[in-house]
Length: 151
Image (cartoon, rainbow, N blue to C red; front, side, top):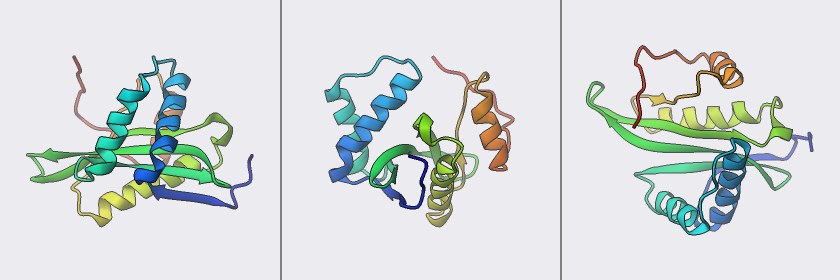
């Protein structure tokens, strides 16, 4: 379980749909959120995979077993006059946390953003998610001056 010798991170393709859907289900269950119907998950995953201009999924496997994923969504910024990326999800199954898998997924996303000339990557985390906040501090991320609202 904790042997990271055979670790791989790759951009999900059409053939990886079920893997992404299963990881999203685990993510939702972990955060005790209602798991959406398979048809809704299929629609989401298929839409993103078929339309790279909307975003992409990265999958991390260890010994060919899926252990985590990240979701990047494209957006635009008027202030920076360019495309930007939202790191919407970064999830590692609990048995593989604190082993560097999250670091590898995050750095893969960061490299994609830099290599493809996006103006920035941003994300949000819950005020009470101290583990995630410490993770992002370790990544040398800057805390935004913006206040996030939602309806």
